[in-house]
Length: 257
Image (cartoon, rainbow, N blue to C red; front, side):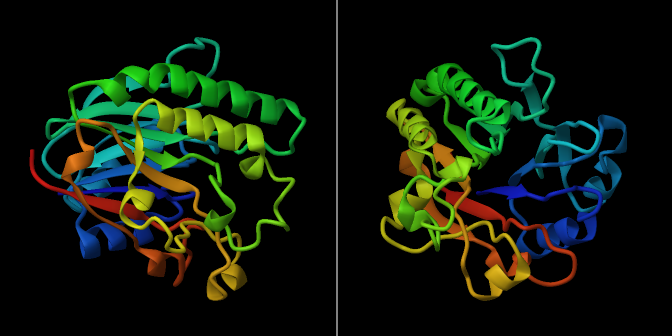
């Protein structure tokens, strides 16, 4: 079974590329981020034609997350990250799919540092840590996937010095990512490829051509799932071509339960 995550940077504007990727690589479960559309304009019909059922949590022009599945409509647990009823950003969705708990998350970017945006990023990350504790240690296999807007270490970015002031590089944010892993979540990319250069995001086409990227997109497995993880990869070629997202899909293959 293949589980993937993909920040599409506008699901309608990139729909042709998304459908192309789905048909060519055929993942079983997909977590999408940055839909940038309200719920009424989510392209459920086009995705159904491509072979996928979907649930989504959208917002006009901003944010937005979804979960796609071949096997049937995912059974939603939560639309929105619990813990702050006044937070209207659509950054989290969670469901049961094929016996797994699957969460798609899009953490705030947080720039510039020292701003309310950065403070919101930190608060949101702390909420995610509090909320996901039970998922991390639970008996139900779970995957937390998405664009977490953190570069965990300098080896996860091509030019760390240039981006040292960016919110994704801050020691506080890296520390929160460490706290998330401390709950029991396992970074599947580093589980299988502990020292390999892995990027999932490139700021420009020129950066992509030179492979000067960031690792911002993650598939975290909980204790009940990690022993089933067999492969990790990034479909980096989909960062190229016509009208691509600035992210590439990342994925894991797991053994059946």
